[in-house]
Image: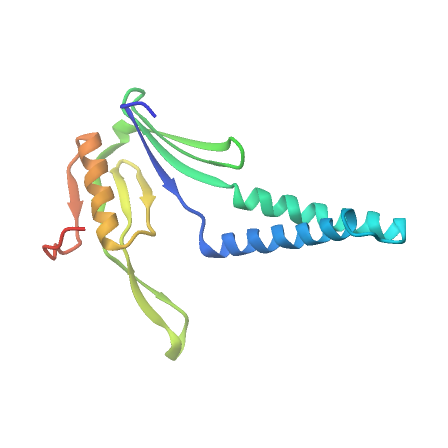
Length: 169
């Protein structure tokens, strides 16, 4: 990365990591059973190899999936992309569309009825003519650090609705 580019990585959720790991291990088990173990019947060996190939490659694809947001001052643009080995989908935004960096505290709830659980998220966004979420999954201290870093990097004002507790991360 050059001095004129800031990369914000967007991690996979736990559900995707679990699904990718389970698929990878399942495929690896079937491939082991079809390739390494001595199976007396050729059809069973070939079938095990065939059954193991698909989940193995699905697991590899999920675990190597990447999402990033590149902010490039030199080209005056923000590129949000995702892909497996290389970026295969991109959305580009001009930096002129944004006039501030925001850090908000937004309440959310999970579940329904008596078992609902309330929690807060702290999204860091670029706002202006368009609105672009940079990260929404960070705890408050890390979100505050990221918002300050992006604000300083782009020389944009930081608008925050998160009360300052006086604690440094």
